Image (cartoon, rainbow, N blue to C red; front, side, top):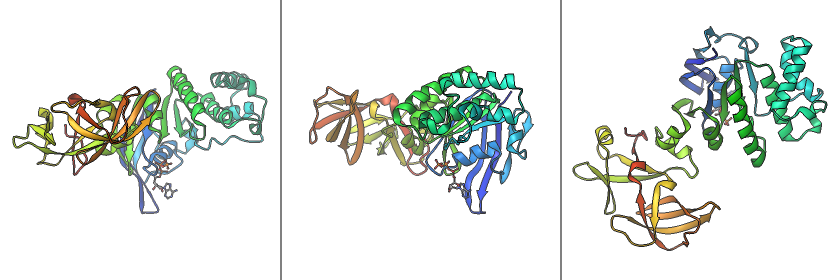
Length: 358
Ligand code: ATP
């Protein structure tokens, strides 16, 4: 068993910067957990605390049954891949991949077997005799991942391992790593600030902001039911649209212009006065070019053709909204269109705290 239990972990740098703020997190055995968040939110610091590369200021970390809080990195039985994916320039690819196994004093036949297996998984078997200077960036990246896989640790920590690759290679490696981790029985903690990577790879995603965990859930759940406005704005491209709305006197509906959106009972129970904002994603707004009763009028500001669909920016009741429309819908700036928010896709937030109302 290699689940990871993080209990009230806090990391303060120089008595001033609270990089990780009392985080509680249980990562399941063999789970692929993504730590996602904007630059500076504390992802790398939390990962380094798990690895033992940073001492925690307070709190405890368990891997399986072992309390590893004060163990040095090499005794934690973990493997790591970093953003900079340091490979040793004076060693062949083979020796680079073998490095962790040599440190463990593994017998030569085990080294041979594991290096070849890791190289085969990463499609770099034909490169084993080369030196890093003779490799492309993407190949070097694969060497770093192969080295981490070869030690077959129960826990693998990865910090933005694809960040230095070009877009196409990144896409390929994303799928390859995903396939790989479906097969290896490893617990993976994967740091990224790329929300597409997080959505596509993670069994669960933890969204962090300012040292705290904001939401921990399955990717589709985080996307569909963001716990806060911050999450709705951070996950998804384009970000979720937010609109301040007014409640009707009986608090049973929200009004935008003369359109009313019914408020679900569970949302109504969580209301604090009139502080309500709704969130709606670009693909959950229906569009028509013909005037319709109870649809919202909007003016097209920008049309961005994206191949599979067009992304519109529209002005609607003082708000700028992003809306996805089919590529063949012919629209141009200045045109008036009518919008309908798909009711079951509307999300409700407290406009002051930003918390979802549920
Ligand atoms: P990025 O995506 O940019 O790598 P991150 O989410 O991984 O960001 P961290 O690197 O964990 O963020 O940094 C969290 C906070 O801690 C930041 O404010 C950062 O400046 C600060 N920090 C990180 N390392 C140190 C350090 N060694 N000394 C002082 N402050 C640090």
